[in-house]
Image (cartoon, rainbow, N blue to C red):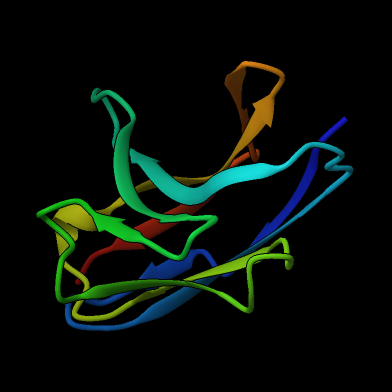
Length: 120
């Protein structure tokens, strides 16, 4: 059973910064990718940023240049999301995601989510 510990959410004024962290445990299969997704009220969950096991990075256009995703190394299951120059439209619940290779396919596992609110 994959378990997550997420932290770092909160309230901040526009232009401010927050750092989210996520540690996954109980992983017995290989990791394909780890990432952060977000879901605003009334909207579908969307990609924020992803880092693959090979180190490739993928960001949503809306966060490019402002958010940075990182892991200590490919074997470490702690991931960070540094969020700078935050905007009100970044307000959402942010979910940690781990995608695992299981036999011939992949499977997603999700954290419980952490709230980020950007407001003046």
